[in-house]
Length: 222
Image (cartoon, rainbow, N blue to C red):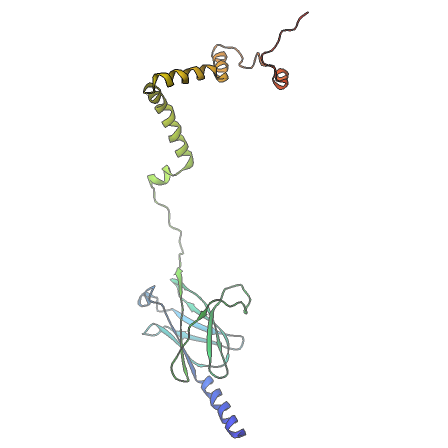
């Protein structure tokens, strides 16, 4: 019985030592258009494995031992999401999405691991986006000028200034007369008339009387 246990443990250790991990790329971006310098690394505190891009657009890591690894795909044109890959003593492989700057125990969504036989495992990585080394200069667009809030406010003001006389001319006579009567009662008209006549628009204004609730300034009797 002890011999069987020892043989099973030795077989599991041998299987884990001969484990091959294959990492496949997504269909977008087109893997055939990636630069030939693209490679992947599988690193831990104890070892670091490097795999080049194969002809079938995969990365193959051979003799992966039991440990917790960080899987990175290094590409000059595109970003790929890093993964945390845990390889057990019995050859079991589990993978999760991981995030830069967070604790190692902070795992993201678990990634499906494909298995064929006792010594082959396969996982896939996700593309994040392309790398931009230069900022593109924005092109001239008339719509971007019209979307400016100040331009929109100016257009609305011009519409009111030029469109109000037309609206008043086509207004109903009774409604027009009522509108003109209310315009005469507007205190701003008197202020503007005094200003046009050379008088100070605030010359007869009594602040104390206004705050006390009185109307016009009363004359002082002697």
